[in-house]
Length: 76
Length: 548
Image (tube, rainbow over all chains, first blue to last red; front, side, top):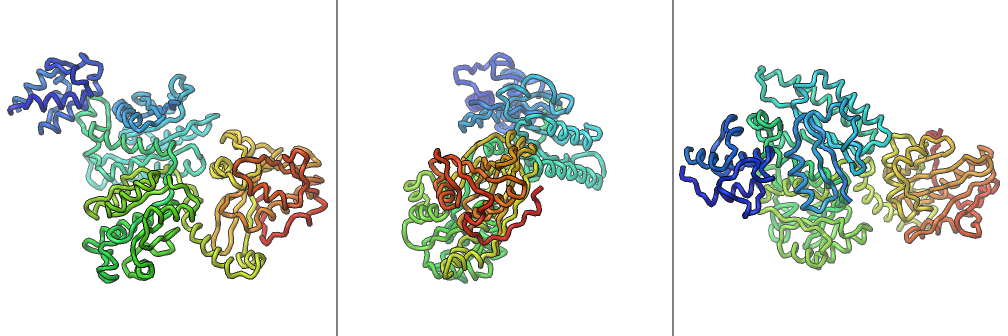
């Protein structure tokens, strides 16, 4: 699908509770304090809801950077 | 001051801790949740140092998932061991314990679940029994959470596998809401009165226009929504919340509809006070508060009219005005989602409170028609039960000690622990009082703590009665009984302590006419056991069979 970048950004900011200046399109888990293993679950859950996708078990563990996440959505 | 609540679970509760803390912080709560980690609920781990016994820790919350029922062999024995351990603590913290539900999504034939549910029910019974005898122990209702949302909506096997969490991020939102409300209910005074409008609130339709036959509260269609709302209000009343009516209508017609409409569930006697007329609703609610002797900040108002809601909210900012659902089918959930009536515990007295107000009105009617006070007292058939306090009643008795202001001779507040220690100390006589009359039993409504460590004099350190039972000569009856009892034990006098406070003038008034001798400093009143006739007359039958 064509991924709406603005929506993607908003979704990440909300799920990880980031300040907007903390957002970078190349963020990965651990780069910011807020993106820890707990917040990762929220992020996966929020993206699934907002973009109508469903990740499998392996993807939940593997999709730990925004570039990976973005391209996964593009392939959906 | 921050109070920590340590989350003890079989799974990781870090999601819960985080969501809970953001809600608690937003609400200005003093609670702060700390996740103790995986398997921290096991009894072997409850002894350890650290956060459990930190000086800021005020509560332990056992947040268990259905997995304990599958993974802990002999969960029954383990739960018992946990409860026994809690009961053995010298100073137990407030404990919140989730009840048990099963995950029905197993691989077994469908009938196999019946036994699993029976196990969960048995454990839940055990929790309720334990709660009965431990005032610091509360049960948080995971079963209702699971029934309301469904286990599939609470748990996601993918997240459970990757992160050892039973409750998924979505499930966790529901879970944290429940725990948030539970913790808040422990630190916030509960609302006491629910004031409801009639037309298009308690029933569908407008009495003045549609007539009684046009009102909707039958067992089907739109009426059912109102009917279910009435049922929910009745449940609220049984839990100790007072109901009141505030409606713009012709009084006679509206009372008649409440009294005899065949579909109406709530009847006039279900309401502690009824205001029906054409004046401002804010004034009617203020009168209700005065009549019930309750502060406006304990009032909640439900009305379908935005104009009325606005008027009340403006004139009486301390009254909580609930949003009204756009569809009457949403009335019941509007009530259950509202947290102001939340309480983790209901005492027997809470459950009787709503009836007590109705009985008081009936007593007033008799009083007005009696020729003399004596005739009134006699017609009530008053009985006073005096009993030696036992540990099981300590919760209620301590609540009385802490809350009673008006008829309280010393207004001495002591900790729950210190109070329990007094009950176990044979130098003291700690007695509770129950008052009943032909209208019903008030429950435990009085307390006295007597130091009988000296042979010659019994000292009453505390004597208090709930204002609900005052003015019926019960106080004289108790004093007479005590003086006779002291005489029987060989004492020659009873010394009653008194300390004036801003609110106990009524207690002072009682002493002034009690027949006792006031000391020069005014803080002790002495009664000579050889002169029991100095104590004013009473009209109460006393039962002392439960005094040991």
